[in-house]
Length: 133
Image (cartoon, rainbow, N blue to C red; front, side):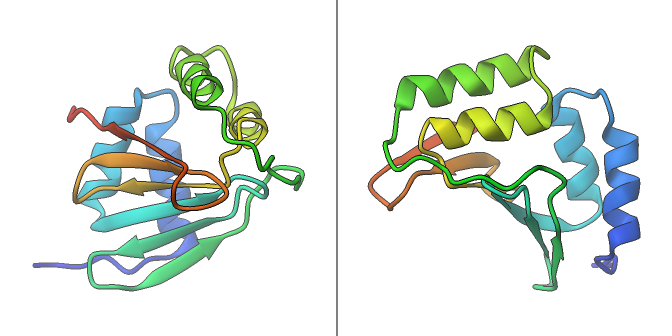
């Protein structure tokens, strides 16, 4: 299996190719680049990408840092996800809304094809399956 080296230019290229595409199509680009998963810290937007061979790359967020709330609000999490999917908010607003709903990180796992939204501790999680493009 061929592996592509993780780099800022690779991530920038993937983002550019994925601009405006539905989430499932964006994910297809990441899978083709041998990305295994990525983890987003909601309060900063910092994203840690992990390749299939275990390499890691941290890309600093472009959002104004903030503290995610400690109270997990499942319905607010679902609503924020839906607004973002429908194109009603941009990525920075999406992160802010997730933080206000008590989400601290989310993991996009391309092996299991799911997104795991994680609250202040492990008992507060919300998972959604990613449909393939």
